[in-house]
Length: 75
Image 1 (cartoon, rainbow, N blue to C red):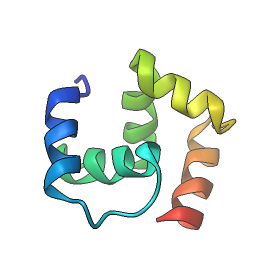
Image 2: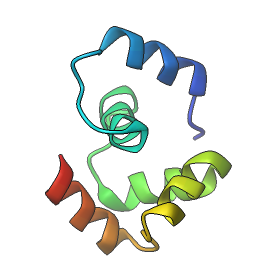
Image 3: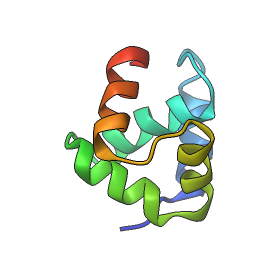
Image 4: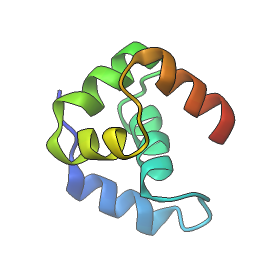
């Protein structure tokens, strides 16, 4: 599975009320568009993609556990 960045752009346009930065919006997108609830699956998807892996790196998220902590705090 790959992140469909064109769909993500449409998602952001259709959901202007979403708060947060692009990473937060990407998490909302992944959870709703791909219907993923497992932090492990979300992390694996994000880590496989070049752009989203840079977003993870910027936030020092290098594990499923850290992503889970981030989601609990932000979303």
